[in-house]
Length: 359
Image (cartoon, rainbow, N blue to C red; front, side, top):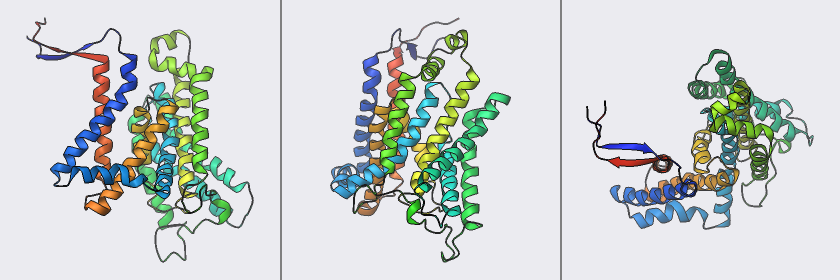
């Protein structure tokens, strides 16, 4: 039976240079196809490019909003990258983000009369523990029953969203909130300090940079990080060396959950100032793209999160000025991931044209 004329043949040695250039190639292709997309929608592509990629960062306030949007993406992505390096596929960072917001909000509401300087650190810990606890569910099911962590972590996102809706429609609803599904506004001691006057950029950005630095140390300078890299790149070698696969799963999922939980805390203690049923903004899902565009490297994640934040802001701009749906930013996110994966395919495989007989 003849083979299909087009086939992929593994390369003997994939190019390391191209593996670093492929995110740039993916970005360039996304921009090019984006221009064609604006034309197909009957809009001026140059105007669309200006509103999508330039307008959002023309002012100091716009730049601060870019950093604000990038902050939770950095936090979630660095946690996911730790697990992804060991082939631990946590797809539920969005749910862990929501649980972190719930945990931090619970601490803020419980100590609503306190002005203690320890309240914010307590909220960070509560958010991290709540997110890690949510990630522990797929970790337990994976290690004890070999359940697929992709499906379990993803399904738990919807449970988390229902949980936050129950809380803000029920026991945590603000009695003076005119019936809106939200908690009472947090008092000053439960809010992160603002870094730039006249903006919404908070101290969470500094926390995010610290998390990237800690992630770098963990992944590249620690023995546990080395074991996780080995487990991801050569599973057989990891087993031969006696590295525990179950331990890698627990570390990967708990790091991802804890980091996403801190991101959830930063959202409710930062720009939102309270917990609402709209706390789930898609950061956890977008962080998956950020992690891969950033090549699972903290420095790459920093730049990839800025790019993804720009896509969020650009979607809002074209909605306001060009009468396009803000969800167009999700189209750009999807194109970015598609072109990145496509580039990676051709880095690792060579396209062969022609039929070959097979037995």
